Length: 276
Image (cartoon, rainbow, N blue to C red; front, side, top):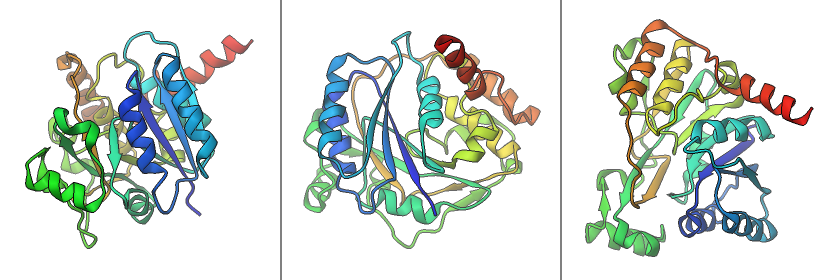
């Protein structure tokens, strides 16, 4: 039986997180549990999650780490450590799910595979009024309030593209296909590669580097374009410097690395020392 632990990464964005959680409470089926992975937000986020936990029929847990700069890999690894399900479904607190998001990922989960869906982008000035209600979604599409509209409407009959390690000679094509905001993987497979590499200190391409190790381990990537959909609620982006990160990710891909030396095991070791 598949038990989905939904990991929602967030940082100081309670308005978008509220929209995201609102939509997950309407999913059918529900995930096994929801873990809000908080990368150092103020107390407002904890209060919001607590309010949702009181009304949800699905367990909602707030996980927090101190704000020491961007550390999405670390808080996702903590979410994996604390999860009780056997399948990890990762997303972000500014990404609203399609009504069939959980359904689609449950159907897509398969041994020896990890699954990546697609996202479209709700323009910033219209983001906070967005809903996946059919009439609202159609209005946003017709009035061009969504970027990447080709990934907006779900095709229930879509078959995924399937990729193996041999399909990727460089990191850029892999990075263009994977995203941690719509990422499903068996917990045992994620732990086997030691999770995300916590050396990354600016966003992108930490998800491609982890995917490279999963591929190097013999897993296949199942990529959906019109199923397993999320809608990113656009906002001001933080700057990123990722040239060195790209080189690091590419070395992992080309070298055949299957394991990082700065991931889940190392976080568990630090947690043990702090508790001691």
